[in-house]
Image (spheres, rainbow, N blue to C red):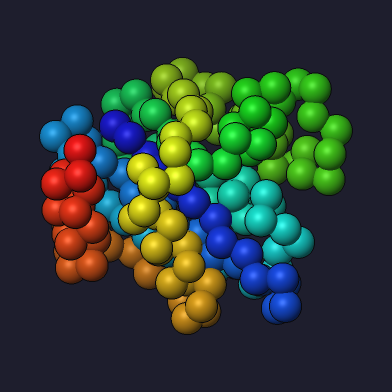
Length: 154
């Protein structure tokens, strides 16, 4: 299973958004979600919150191994080096580390931002519209359009 995550941040309001999408090996959407983050201090914090919340949801929806994909190299590196983390986001890194260190196989990897269009769109939508939404399966029409565009570009 692949879990794409992305965070969005608005400096003026100090708020953010998160977008997540879980897909199976056939690229079929298991779920997608967008969430408003009321208080957020930076783009990095939004990315880490998106990663944490996405993993929490994915662990509830599948027993299969999960590959978490993020376009934020800094967040990926911080999570992979969790034992050394002493930044203001250490609590988020620790929470993510606890989620991925159980019996389940969860890998975190960096992808190009162009490979994360759906999660990026969902994160920006949540931030701009101050909304939180969840779509099981492929019930979000906007995502179906993105999936078709991604498949055509590969």
